Length: 345
Image (cartoon, rainbow, N blue to C red; front, side, top):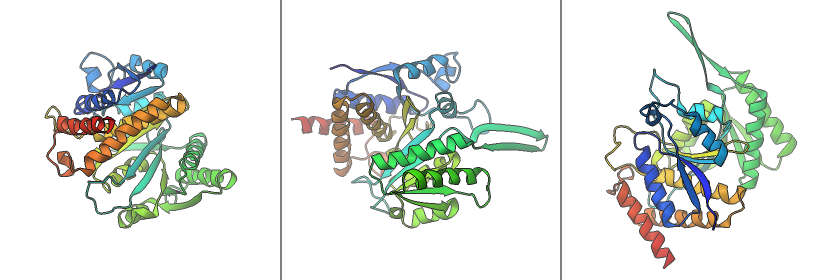
């Protein structure tokens, strides 16, 4: 069985711990992957490299796929976000974050099944900031018809392929009439001209956030511009147990980078207590992507085995500390692999 070359970026903080854990789980199912390890973030700076080395970018371009740990971004100073740089340089314009309830993880709601689709290259995250006077700074929100139309088409196509029933656009076009207005016009046009079979609605984002915490089951697929997608996906993670149980993917035309939604959590780095589930779930998304794009059913089989094992692990009450359990990182990995092996026998 041939293997697929995949770039592995361990990242910073808890990144090396959780990516190593995910790699052990992938090895337990003999997933057909061959990892090429590359650095980014503080890990790259500490080796005298740029925060996003060109060699890392080129490796992803060559392999087409990467699994990435979280990278630290300084707050209010220092270098620009590695995540933003990576998405812009590789044109990873569509971020997808599925959010669903997991058996064994107690939450306020038991009917959450959402997909957040986020435009990943524009908006306020374009990073166009400057100081106008010593006491005045400005940040520019960028929106182009090309990018707005592209993410709308991608989102409706995704919903169709995944047999989802409704797309809701969260916006603030009542205030930002030009930028968010453009985003809405593109979504409406794609819906009306190409996907009228999918239910479509528009909700002002502040009201939408209220509705989410009242009853998340009224939503299906959420389509948002960059900043809104970042904030709302974290809010939705809180509905199902937190950032430790939500995976993520960043898609371009030919490239894809998979990563957990959570950050590098430097306060618990090196303690062996981080939850490796989110990056493991991201690796399952990666395997499914490879199964679809490389026509390799063995990737789908590996993905299904891991998903079944972590669902069983959680349902059996084997939880990490962030979920109210007692397991450390290695303990959770051991419990999950035990169930992989039990299913095999």
